[in-house]
Structure formats: C-alpha cells, structure tokens
Image (cartoon, rainbow, N blue to C red; front, top):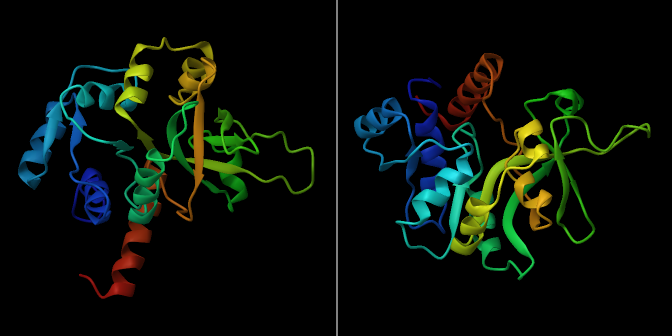
Length: 225
C-alpha cells in the first residue's frame, strides 16, 4: 500500500492523467491483482505466465487493436503523465530500424548509480540504446561520470510487440533481468527518449518508505487529504 491505496492504483491514475491514451488496462496473471482491480473499478486483463511485462503486453496486443501500446511498469507510482504522452507520441516517429521507444532520464543521485534496482543505459549519438545494465555504466574512469536511468516506460507498435514476442531471450537479458536487452541482443534498435521525469520505482521496502514520504509531501503541497 502507498498511502491508503494499492501501488497499482497510483500507476493507473498517472496513466489516466495522460492525454494521449485511449484506455488504461492492468495486465496480470495474478488473481489477487485482478480482485484488487475489480474492487477499484479498474479494467484488468488476465494473461498467462510470462518472463517479462512486455511479453505480457504482447499477449494483450493480440486481442486489443491499437495504433500504439504503452507499457507502464506497475512499480512506477510517480511516473509523469507528460512522459507517458511523450512516449506515446514517440511511437509514431519510430523509423524502420527501431522496434521500441524507451524513456530515460539523467541520474542526479550518485547512490543510484550503484543500486542494482536502478537500470542504467548508455545511449548512442543517434539516441539508440547501446547497453542496459544494473551495474554502473559507463565505467567511472573520469571524476564526474554521467549516468542515465532507464524508466519502466516503453512504447511499441503492434509489429514491434510481435517481434519481441517471437525473439528468444539472450544471455544478457537473462543475466541482467532487463527486457529491452532482447532487442539489443538481436541487433534491433531501441530509441531512447529523454524525459524530465525523475521517477521513483518501488522495488524494495525502503523504496516504499521513500515513496510514502514523497506522497505525503505532494499531498501537503497540494492541500489534498
């Protein structure tokens, strides 16, 4: 719980605040999440078991016709709706070499660079992902290295999702637990889109405590109960 609501409720609200999405749907293979969604009045789709969230979205896409599919991971309660809209718009600008859009932002917290729960990304001059890792990349040889964090926010066409679904997991994806590496390992581009969202993914109990503080501060500044 975050505040008095489940974590997924907060993610769903951020999606509802995005202006470019026609619908927001929770995809899960867990009956407990389905029951939570039912109680909250959130549309939910049950899927089979999958290795990654993108595999799950790919299954949903087979039954839901859309121009674009935006995967917002359920551990991002403060994801910026503006970033969601930016990724949605970015899907429409993908060229023939790119299979997905992935949002990223600069890390300002030095501790996050060595946090294995924070996925770092190295980006080419053409704004394509070169590598994702839970280790600090690039290697901090210089005194002031610059690190970028991959956000759990992806955009796909139906064709991109179908491509992803039909690719085998490679050793890098399995080792790092980062699904976008599947494209990289098969020499397919992931277009990285910079956004201003600092984000706060909730992966640990400590993250949840920090998220609670952020929520309280936001409610205090807005006057919300």
